[in-house]
Every structure is written in C-alpha cells, then in structure tokens.
Length: 300
Image (spheres, rainbow, N blue to C red):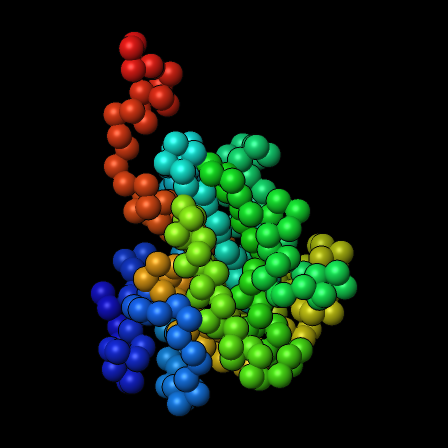
C-alpha cells in the first residue's frame, strides 16, 4: 500500500510496506543537486505516519521469526565476498529507541565473528577529527568494511543534518549544503559494491520517557545529559529527521522507518529489511556460489 502526502506524489511519496515499515526512496537524478530553499515548507511529515501499534506479542512467534531472519542473514553475508559486495547498516533514531539492541542482534546473527562484523558507535568528533572534513572520520581506523564484511554505524554521517542542525553547531548554510554530500556519500559507497541500509528507529515520546526511567533504575551508567536534551528538542529533531528523509531517501539508498515501540517487532524487522536489501543487491544464488559454500570445486 502506498501513501501520499497532501503535497502530491511528486513531492512526498512514501511506501508503507506490509510489515508496517515506511520506505522512502525518491528518484533523485543528480546526487549533487543543490539545496532548494523553496522546498523548505513542503517537507512531508513522515514520522507522523509511523504506526506504533505494530507488535509481535507472543515470544514464541518472535523467536521463530528471529531465528529465520538470523539464518537468512548469515547465509547472505557469506555470499558477499565472492560477489565483491559489503554491507553498511546505518542506525539512526530517537534516543532510547534500541539502536544498541539492534546492533547486538545483527552481531549475534554472525556469532559475533570479528572477521566479518564491526560495530562503529559515533559520538562527537575529536579535536583531530574536527581538523578534517566531516566525512573523513568515517573512513579512518578501518571503519569502512572490506568486501564480505559488515559494519553497523550507531549514528553516522547523517548527524551532519541532525545534531549539527538541531544544536546549531554550524550555520544554516553549512548544513543545508550537507545534503548533497550525504547523497554523494551513499552513491559512492553503492557504486563501489556497498549495500547501504539506512534505518530510523522510532518511538513515541511517552515510550521514550518510560525507557529513560527504566534506564535510571536498572542501568544508570547509560544515562547521559543528551537524554534530557533529546526530550527538550523533540520537535526540532522531528523536523530535521523529516527533511533528512526527504532529501537523502533515494532509490539507491532508501530510508526505512521502523517503529521500535515494541522491541520484538523492531528487532525482527531490522534484520528483515537488511535481508531484503541484500537479496536485491546479490540476486539469486548462482551454482558456483552454491558449490563454493558447500565446499565443492568445479572439478568435483
């Protein structure tokens, strides 16, 4: 089922998948197209369309679906090296929405194999990183994967139009021009064999409050001053996220918005989306791939 905003299909289409996940994949012919200020008031409110009632209430159903997606994911990752592909998962979203938990499930599906998987948590840039162009730090220290490898970025280069914008760390003209660079970054990675899967995990403000309260009781070390700031700046972050989806949700690197109100639903669908994107990029398994996976040689 497809939904359209009041602005019409050209300005703000998105697709609601059968699972309840929102997919934003606009056709943008030129990734380097300049920022058009006239479009500013026409940004769709994608986050208002998120269905937070979706859930997987039964633990047995969750475990069955999770096991199936983990097995599927493991097999797909094993195909990437031969296909000269690599996987980059970008996790953005509300504070407390479960980015760390999703990362753990992705790592667990690969048996925490350090040869294949690396989690890259992104915080504020260091002084050395500030002395370089903003995207430089995402390539340093082996942060980008080789063919056959997986990287999960817990926050990413998209902070240039989220935290930088909301906290006014740069003038407006600077973050406005960042959109083209971010689209070009995605395009470059995709052209070099990258499967770039961009996920926004979303929760309601009430659920966020509950999770912060639970965190204060059970895991106080995870609390940070940014948690309180996130609640104060809920509306500015919503506005910034909606514009980010609109300007950087492309056909070659779509955005997927996943409700994380129910953690079981979120974790299953994060892996499911990754698997779907990988299958699309890899195509059907060839006989040579199957033989190699089973240990057979061409002569055998």
